[in-house]
Amino acid sequence: MTQDTFPSWPESAARLVDVAAGRSPADMIVTGGIWVNVHTRETLPDNDIAIVAGRIAFVGPDASHCRGDETEIIEARGRHMIPGLCDAHMHIESGMLTPAEFARAVIPHGTTSMFTDPHEIANVLGLEGVRMMHDEALMQPVNIFTQMPSCAPSAPGMETTGFEISADDVAEAMTWPGIIGLGEMMNFPGVSNGDPQMLAEIAATQRSGKTVGGHYASPDLGHAFAAYVAGGPADDHEGTCEADAIARMRQGMRSMIRLGSAWYDVESQITAITEKGLDPRNMILCTDDCHSGTLVNEGHMNRVVRHAIDCGCDPLVALQMATINTATHFGLEREIGSLTPGRRADMILSSDLAALPIEVVIARGRVVAQDGVCLANCPHYDWPDRARETVRMARDLKADDFAVPAPEGANGVTANVIGVVENQAPTKALQFELPVTEGRVQATGEVCQIALVERHRGTGGVVNAFVSGFGYEGRMAMASTVAHDSHHMIVVGTDAEQMALAANRLRAVGGGIVIFRDGQELALVELPIAGLMSDSPAADVAAATQQMMHAMRDCGCTINNAYMQHSLLALVVIPELRISDLGLVDVRTFQFTDVIVS
Image 1 (cartoon, rainbow, N blue to C red):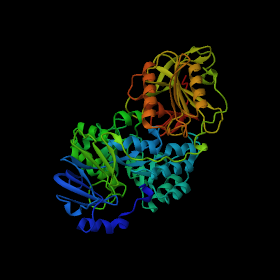
Image 2: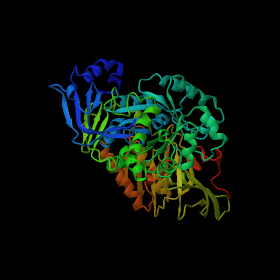
Image 3: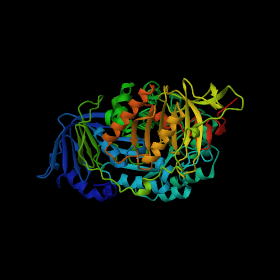
Image 4: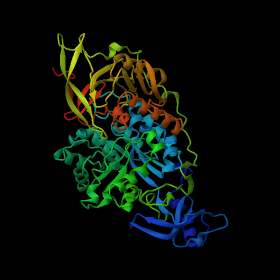
């Protein structure tokens, strides 16, 4: 039963009432479990849950009156019955998987609801790409709610995208069945300054009664932040410290704290609850984002909940932050987020509330995973050729395309350099002294070269700059068509010839990630759909991703999940310094800045 065919509560009410009253048999009864009640923050032993038409009809100490000859009985055997976990903010494309394969990967980890913002594909394929993601999401056996992307480009005037999203696009999408709200409003200066288009998108969402997602990536908690909140965004996930979480909750926003593959922002913010004692109802857990390797080898929202518990959070509070808090925020408290009558029968059986082993997963009243194995069918959308032919480069590139010319007569220069910060999305604006050889500025030691290659319109444009923090050694390069959010091609390397090899390889395969060293290909992850995703099984993509991360380490990179850092170096809405197809951007001022200072 897919989301678009799943009957509403009113459509199911007569059957729910009859089963609860004992007049009709349940489809399924989970019996003898510990009921984890996230409304009251209690664990209640020796309870049963009766299910019919994919929804919960009865919860109580004895559901025998709901039992019929055909009723499926699942023995909980004293295990905890926990609501299915919800990921409040994430981008499926960052998993390198289509919605179907992403669902197949996370279902065994107990994730039964996801709130996804497909703004990655929006930048490549526009509203049509969003519709493709939305339609495949509705086909899945778990709940994938789509937020209409708000910012493509993320910062108008700072980058060029394949397509742009308009206020009319947002208004149209609000009529689609699976749209739950507006995706993260990344253009925070636009909102704070009263930009008419940003406010029109927010207004179209609010008129439809849906939730406006936030993204305030600035440390300024003064007037600019107040203006942003006044503009309408209802949540924010860009906080990195306790003060950020507190400021958002005090202003009536939900503070979304994330543990993804590379962003570790839970420990520094959850102290607002564990130490300051603030009301946890306004704090929500999310991933934003996990790549396929993390999903297959470490987990998804179960990983985030365990981490919150390890950080000192009460297990029941952590579960509230991953279930009912999320549901309430999106106006779905009567649909998901708890094990109570009328709600979708999305449930986990686990023998330990803190360690949270995911032993059985039930979604919409059907067993969809057991002991780490997905048992559900996750149907695929028929992705058209136009979604698979998006790497449009005018020509193969040469080493000369990656040259950074020095001022005439210079033997050395001072350069602005992007500084990668391990485990965080923000970068640092640094300056380094770099040598000059034959009129060209050279990457050296700690500093690598970075290039942004235009790949949407085939202009042949290449913007060059410098980056530090990866620790690469030898003659190497890494290229990727995943480059949030414009998703041009981003190339980082120590050698121009290797950079050209890597870029041309991705042109040939139609998108993905590749690493070259000394003329040899060390790893390739093919992402043929929009240059962002693969429709291959998650385990296969994870294996290729693992090889890619090993190759990065073999080239000298030691920072955690460096691929995620690589993919965000073009995100021109997160301070301090980023690269775009138009130049080097100082995100503190939203102004272009020169690569060479002097």
